[in-house]
Image (cartoon, rainbow, N blue to C red):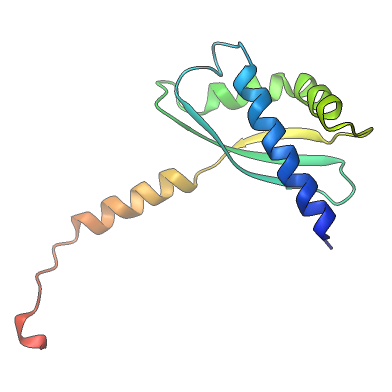
Length: 121
């Protein structure tokens, strides 16, 4: 069961992750808009699933996710060092489909041809 301390640690970890990813010099990660949308950490701090959203990239989010998973060891070391914790979780980066799904639903709603009913008053 998540406790208040666990949630605060996850928020601090997310903040540090955003800073670390922003400092990375990998060309696959830089450029475009990269957002860490959510961070799910197991209660024993063994693994953390990081959901990222990528917009404005030609190749889509797949190369960014692959590059971040490749650099997960570096990210883990940096998080441990910056947060002064002995055991940092293993980070698994996955793409977040929330923004794309919202855009799809918005497009579908825009395509509906509903005329206002003047007799409904």
